[in-house]
Figure 1 (cartoon, rainbow, N blue to C red):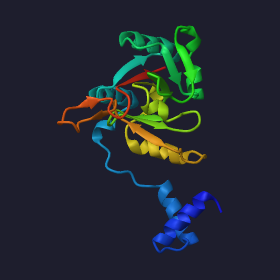
Figure 2 (cartoon, rainbow, N blue to C red; figure 1 turned 45 degrees about the vertical axis):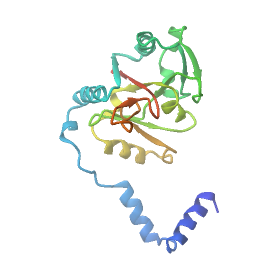
Figure 3 (cartoon, helix red, strand yellow; figure 1 turned 135 degrees about the vertical axis):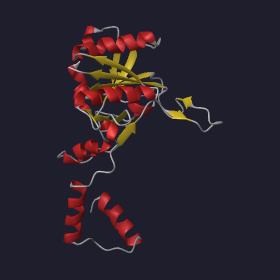
Length: 222
């Protein structure tokens, strides 16, 4: 018996439930694969080009910054420009994600790249995204060995490289995509809307309270 089976068995016993019948299991599987969508805001029901524009507008509305580049070859330059504009160090920790290998980082040799998880001294991180949603300007980031979650929260400056084709209207599309994959669901799914913030202290918004102070999104349109 695996650890997962033991834990679920303990939960069932605590609830006074026995093992599910095969019919009940089949019903749950069907429900997970064909769940009904919730209410979807009409503002995200647009052609794809308009969804990309809406995503950028909504993200900027929650204090994220957005740069749009025509091609993947422009990504390293966009990163260097952002660092220079904000007087940030050129030492960067980047996810060991093969999706980021497509960009010509070697053309910017002054960018000091380290691949792996974030550590306490890291000020700038770069990750890719799984998807993004126009309805709220939200990013979906998943975690695995190549996408450490520490990159999303530990450094004060988080740069996300997002392909325009990954932008869709509503959250439901993201969950549908994850469920359709043959592999298991990701260990963690982070939905990120703008930089970290809190209004707990005298109802005054403070950025960087529980995560990055800045969130910069580079949309690759080509």
